[in-house]
Image (cartoon, rainbow, N blue to C red; front, side, top):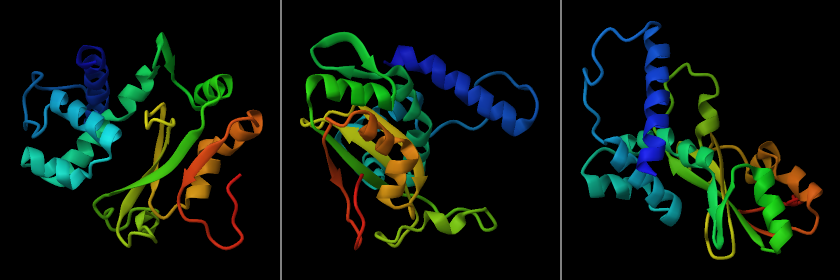
Length: 204
């Protein structure tokens, strides 16, 4: 996985730096400040986070670095395994790359999905940034981002969605991600949904 994703991460990183500079690189590759967390370790903490849900602060303690460094590394690397696709046990060579793939697989084999909106604490967005207050979670009373994930009955992760501001309600995320539409397309698929429901609200 390190070999497969390393080049993708380098390409993304160079594109990000080029956009920030507004010009091509002027110095040799490797010049400038060094990373507190190299790509290999960043991939490792991302996989640990996805598999165990260990808080960013706990991972930062293990590495002896700032929590913001862990959060930044996970934010950069987490989309890469999703592009690679999620492996299916006992189906060698088959990978789920989209939300539609996950629901088609659940429909075909009859598994019950679990949907969760996991919140991660982040630094308060800079003053003047549009939508700054949207990151304040009503449940945690702090600045967070929310990631909608889907797992199977054994806790294995076949899909991880986009990051959303912490104030966004779980049901809004379900509609925004297209999960509600997939339930309509696959009416036989059932799921357990983690999260609190307000008065008169229903999960699709």
